[in-house]
Image 1 (cartoon, rainbow, N blue to C red):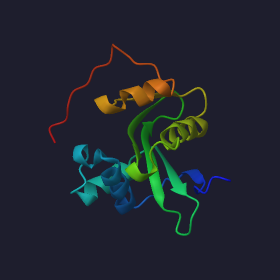
Image 2: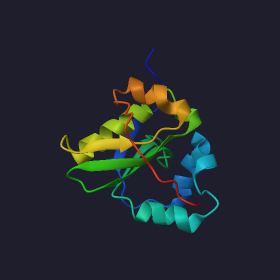
Image 3: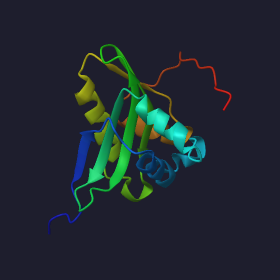
Image 4: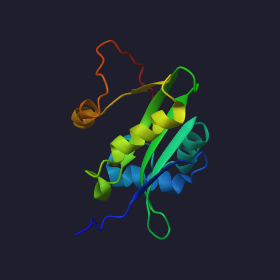
Amino acid sequence: MPDASPQILYACEPILPAAEFRRVLVESGMGTIRPIGDPARLQAMLDNAGLIVTARLDLPGRPIVGIARGITDNVWCCYLSDLAVCASAQRRGIGQGLLEECQRQLGPQVTLILISVDAAIPFYERTGLTRLHNAFWRRRDL
């Protein structure tokens, strides 16, 4: 019997409403570590990103189930500041698909960089990303 799950459509969407972004953040569990109560800030995060890749179900209305948001110069590096998949769509390869589509959009000469929450480290290791021991950061105030 064929798989009844809808196909996942990946696309670069440079213009995305903050409400869709917010919903994926909330439904993925990342809403606890993102400013979901500040729609203007969420929209600015989208408007100033250099790369927005979405995963949508191939169903009427094309509901969004995942997003990757990156800051990039498009020639050397891309910092993936968000990689989120709705809990209802997890374990379907969507996170891996988002990473692959980001790399396809950017090309092989661009390095992907990200900071992981502890719970997602095994996922990133399974995707083939290399864990670094020499990264640093200065935390923002808010």
